[in-house]
Image (cartoon, rainbow over all chains, first blue to last red; front, side):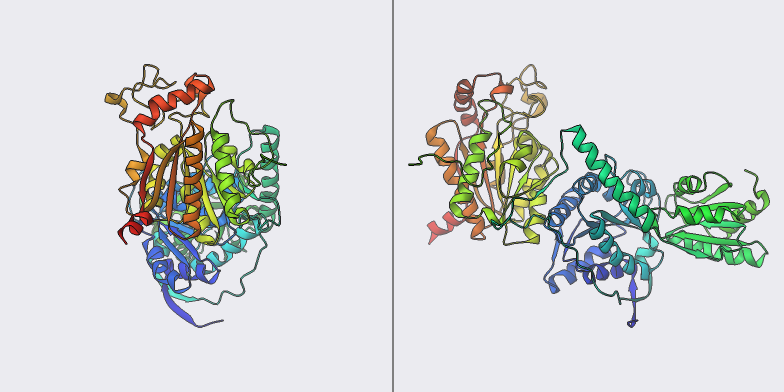
Length: 355
Length: 251
């Protein structure tokens, strides 16, 4: 373990990207992720990298596509309204099977919404990031340490599977300061024989492309991509459990909501209610097996979210609606308090297995 | 004795373009420039959305197929990733002057060291002949069936004139491919634009006035005449900016 330093979440994330070998960043100013751009504007020139403030979110994501096509590690960051604009590019990245890292430091929505923390882009990230059939790897940090380590891991997964990794963070984790170790280990190297680097007259030309007007061919491309997705669902789901072994009530929460939930669980235990937490670290793939396992002994689940209730659908799907799932949520930039979560745990304990 | 050959940079495949379409000529001019400069092995082309979407199959260099209007942004990424590569975009008027206006203006403003080949045929061809940002006043298209009315849909955009006010742009020239003389001039301009990139001179754009016989509803020869009679008066040919020639003249 290296020494720990005190850093803001957004800055830890940016430094981890440099450590992961990312030398190209394209962005556009938007609150609350501005520290990422500000940090990289200072750092990139010092490591012979490119920091470029694009004319739009759309241009930024297409510059990302350019660097990814050339086979180099690249990232962009934004917040919810900006991510909507990047949706076109996210779909093209998937259609071209390009690796890239995209940060969404979420804020309240819809529309211009607000600038306070939110998790209301869960559906966008896990289901509808753009047109067409595709997924992104979606990682949800719950600490400044994870802002760094998941970025490092995210680049690796992106290269390994030729996909976009999205870091789905929120304003709280982005803005807060915590001690963080930047000991990230070795950067794994992946060969990219498909990249456009020039034929040098030694090979036939490489084409990075998502177009096929032959439905039979385009179907095969989709089938192949989904074979890869199935492998990812099998191998890459990550979660953290807290006091789940004997839990009657299982809270499911990610990001800042999970931090609040932990406090509520400790308070519930003090009152004699056996509560526990499953914190998904990967939102896609969603840790379905862990939830299925928990449903064998738990009486009820509580989904704690900073949205009108989005992840709750994945919980219900994972347990096939065999247990009641209650929603404890705030929206618009508000965060549930531990008391609110505790009240929901108590309610779940009262109704027990009655749906 | 071989008197006529296909340029090496142009793939030996059947093009999908309509009879009489001038994309084939422009493709050939780009390929000739790449051959003559000996840069095929380090060139990356960015194809657009539009009639020339399949350009990625037609050039022998590495290619990326971009989203509609985004080619200059993709080119920016490719060039920044590997500055030793020669990067060009090949875009139509809908792609470059409507949905991609911001990417065009700002890649020029940044002085990106890339080459943009801009094919202006005053219409959206691929989708069946709709009004383009470059459609002439009075011109009938599928979406301007009574002729383009400037009072309600505005005037065509003159891209070279617009970009000539952008400080970051280095070399802007408008050419046409309606006659042997003009084709030769176009070839020279395209080669010079690539040469500038090799020398690190920044952003070049060559606007090529082209025909669309199918969607103009004209025979290929009448389309060439229509270009000469209608397009060239509205879009005058010539060099709109040449930063280095200006500097050369000052010395």
